[in-house]
Image (cartoon, rainbow, N blue to C red):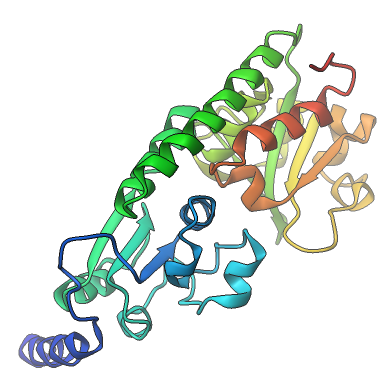
Length: 292
């Protein structure tokens, strides 16, 4: 397609899309038709009471369950289409960082729809800021402030629990074991963030972000525990994860049969439930830690 024909196609698309966009999309006042892109954003909107105003979600919006059951699904948040987003006629799109592709979002903006991005640092401060940002964008600042106070208190209780840990265990957060490649969460990832909250050392701290880890590095890292995602009804089985001929099978975690599986969004979503998720992880790894 030549640049000229692309420009004509873009102009035609935006003209047609503007007919789909709701009247008053740029008007002042709280949005009444919100497209929520990102599991934590959707979770926060429901906690704030804005569920009825959500007109579409993405495939990561798995909690609460009614979000995927009742709302139109516009696809994976990093592979969105302008047509799909505009078809639900939103007057506001709230998206986590990394949503895209950029060209699709540009077309949606050109059609007159407001798009706001929400940062996602995997820290308690990041969660509280995310709640405040979503609340402000939805015009629910008071509800957001109340939710933030509740979540902040849970983070404080979690910090108190961490002080009781005498010797931090080492854990490896494994995202997948496909094609002989072990994908793990390294430094500055959401996996690293949740381990820190639970008082657990990251055995993959030598890597940055989510990366494959070699068999030699896994054995050398010697994790005490392996943490995996449970994204369906079936949890990963220790006999498969710690197969004798595998790298994970030659770790202290295998000798202890220490495998923790948790729902992916709950564990790594960094939404309002994060303090509870970190507490559950802490209790699974440190079953003898005093509670209360």
